[in-house]
Length: 335
Image (cartoon, rainbow, N blue to C red; front, side, top):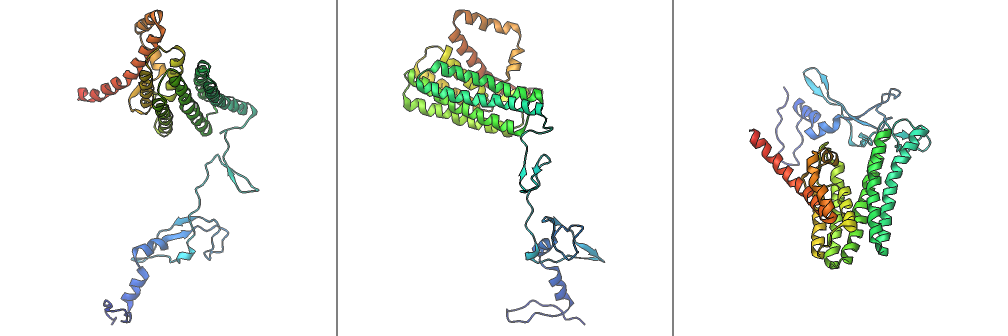
């Protein structure tokens, strides 16, 4: 008759013998069972002695033996670390060095597609270079040319994405390059040019400097959020950085003469508008508005271009909160 297992009363008490104790030793704790299930995948050419050839780790379930389960036991030293993540399908390992490289241009790498890829990304580089030129011109004191350079950045920024989609050479590299160029041109360069303009208009540097720095910070937040957020075909989530840079540049060129503190407050409003969650209509949707809505701006342009510009910008900034309120109350009305 097997000896009944009893709990050890002290560390000096010898371990009990019998089947029950042996069964407990075979089963082990839950953590031991989980570790024991981690085995290495063997290659077909392996000898079956447990030697690893692939360097990968797989989870193997227990083997059924009769009415109970028995787990293959392996020591902790035999468990290999997890293999690194497999590279994407587009990755190309170098047979000599073993380094995995990801091509910048996805798909077929023909000379024509390479030229199209270079043209699309060349527009991004041109936008970045024009942003640097705007900074140099602003430091030299030529603010109007600096503003025109920012407007040229906006044009090239719209061309790179359009060309990439038209030629079918859009890539993650191009998207990241465009985002970095936008931060440099529409965040940093636009902030520096705006600072020079505000100081020239008589604003205190202690107010102009943090306000223009806020433009760069909000632009970075806006671009980072745009990269990780799902895209909406009808509305922007906040005012785009491109539009804010264009408005700041147009303020320098055709903006009205306003008090310096009002100009600083306006720049701060533009910066905060980039990081709000208000929905703003895209330019394609604005272009489809009824023609009678364009009568008032057309008449205003004949009277005063600067104040018409301010009225149009203010109307667009107010459209975001109004659309947000309308979308919030629409489900309640439908219920």
